[in-house]
Image 1 (cartoon, helix red, strand yellow):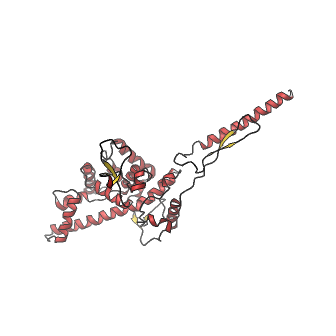
Image 2: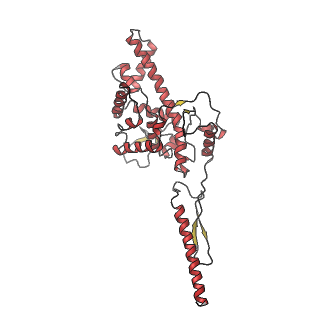
Length: 332
């Protein structure tokens, strides 16, 4: 073989090798989800000149994702108090006021989901605890009535206030007990994840609006960017994530659109059956224009993320250590 042909052959082999390496890099890293990560977060391509070939080979640098200080601090805080979703049996009373800045920039879907669920779980449990306390008081008032004991003026005033808040026009305490009842934690978590994009939507980041509840009047909330001309609704804003969960629970327990959920729950309770988020989700075809598809989404979120296992948990006894200063604004 002549020296000219030998040189050309070597160039061909080298070019083939570098081309294969380039394809290998692309094949390895093309499956990494970097779409949520802004430019400048370590996933820019690196261009390397190759003198043995006719053109440079473009290689991709392995992504290095930076986490915002609030995300890092919150993860570290949860770790310091032993709060994990793996085999969790008791939940600390940690009530986070808003989602941490940078949650929407996390490229790891699993990390984003886990952090969001750890934020939401104590909030959902606390709201159910409040509902349970109201329910216990109502049952005590009902028991007095059955026993012939007169209801005190303060108790009657409180019942009247609840009837107005929960849109009860007749039936008294019995009707209230059908409405003031627990919402399974798994359902609260699934709907908050679905409605807020796992805590990344503009509405939750700017107004703690987890569930996309409507209100009227621009001073009440956030104007949707895609709101049609002539429409006046806004997405209701809240002072904290806890307030958003409370408003959601009252909406589920009072709005006529969710009567079927309350009836299903009452039937399950009367029969002594488990009140599960999976069963109640089946009644929420009116929560979204997507109807049955929306229910399927909730079921998928519950199934994939093991949310049913988070129902029925208890709060851990005792106080938890205070969070670091960087989280002070996140605490309720």
